[in-house]
Length: 130
Length: 99
Image 1 (cartoon, one colour):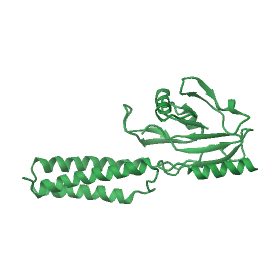
Image 2 (tube, each protein chain N blue to C red; image 1 turned 90 degrees about the horizontal axis):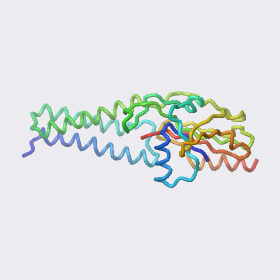
Image 3 (cartoon, rainbow over the protein chains, first blue to last red; image 1 turned 180 degrees about the vertical axis):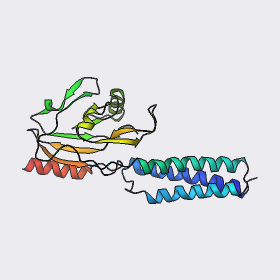
Image 4 (cartoon, helix red, strand yellow; image 1 turned 135 degrees about the vertical axis):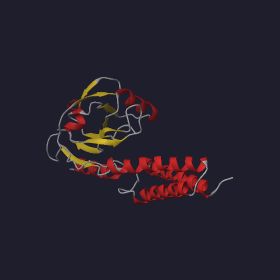
């Protein structure tokens, strides 16, 4: 039988999971807000539910729920705090020649961007591994 | 169109194949090119993949270069979740073609 401690602990965990799922959906659609205050608030709410759960003398379900909520919410909050983009100016200027470089293509062959001289190029820097 | 990212050659090959991407995809695993363009993002949130949850990645950016190698337009993301709007890129490309 679930007591208040168990229910709030599991509710905290469910809050973090639902919050993370919605956040991930927004990331994939490139529509996450610049400052995800709503998501941060929900993670704080989840932590609050976890704390309440532990104070309400929960059974093992409440403890599992609260612990899970703390870990997920904590990781998310640390992540959005420290992984913001640095204030850096791109080292290229409109009206000036592009910095040439050599990289490796998906077949493992070396490629120099200046090889494409003579045709317009759209160079896209992808963030990298998710 | 050319893309470049800190992913390994294997990862870019997988992405190309999986999503049927026709354009050239370059690997910048050492971040040498990312550093050349001053687009390194230290402590970026990644999802593990055997290389840890926080590691250097690239700040998303789009650069349009004309036939003579001159930069005509550029966009640098202020948030890693925001990339250049495809409509903006198209507008810039079209105004370059008209000029």
